[in-house]
Length: 84
Image 1 (cartoon, rainbow, N blue to C red):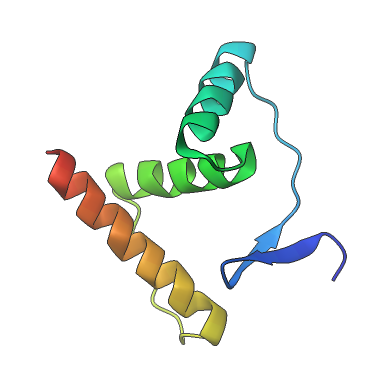
Image 2: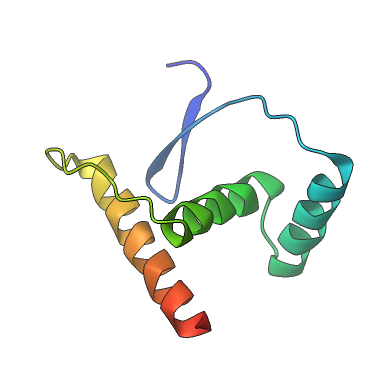
């Protein structure tokens, strides 16, 4: 599939986003401070925010690539609890 790839075993899709310049600057600085790409940082931030605001994934049959997603969601929930 064109525009798809994997990051640490997780399927990815290319998308186009519009961000205000301040949000992009924060993302760029944070990504650089963590030694990761802006795309990776934004992906992780989106997951954390979804979990923080109460997103509950639909329970569907677990496919091999979905196992990585579940592990990352669990890790995000653990991080949020640790932060208070």
